[in-house]
Length: 185
Image 1 (cartoon, rainbow, N blue to C red):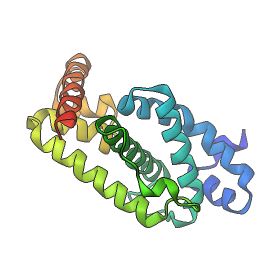
Image 2: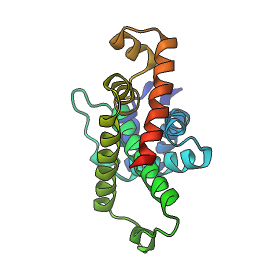
Image 3: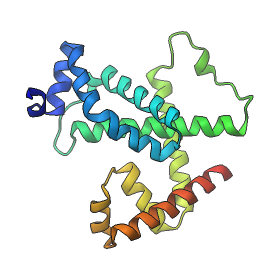
Image 4: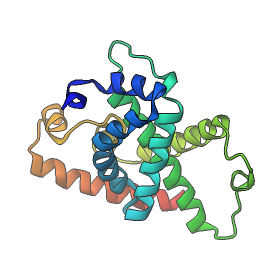
């Protein structure tokens, strides 16, 4: 019951001293993260990998998080999730296009460094931005609001002044167009 009272930021700080507290954050975020990742990669196994990688990054870099006005743990965590998901999607896309493609990062014994992660995140962001720029503005805006800014359906409906049914239909079209355009790049 006590963990429901503590904020995510407090639990993160406690987990830096005692890793067992991190399980509370895992319990809170694992299911919503999985839903969000599934919305991007569409495959359960891939989505689970993304969530696991995201949780590892949150734990590993938890000491870098600093509570500031307008920046909460939740938005920071979702940003890590989205960057990880888009990076993962980008890698999957490359593998689909060229099955013989080999990435030197996979052969580093210590694993990829944070600089490689940042470079991959920037590449993924550039790719996603390029795809969204090719889309009609109203569809690209919906994808940005839902996936990059993590707005709920209700919030987007209020911003766009549309019903939830209309929003779902437009998001479906936007996702389908995004997938089509991403295969052309």
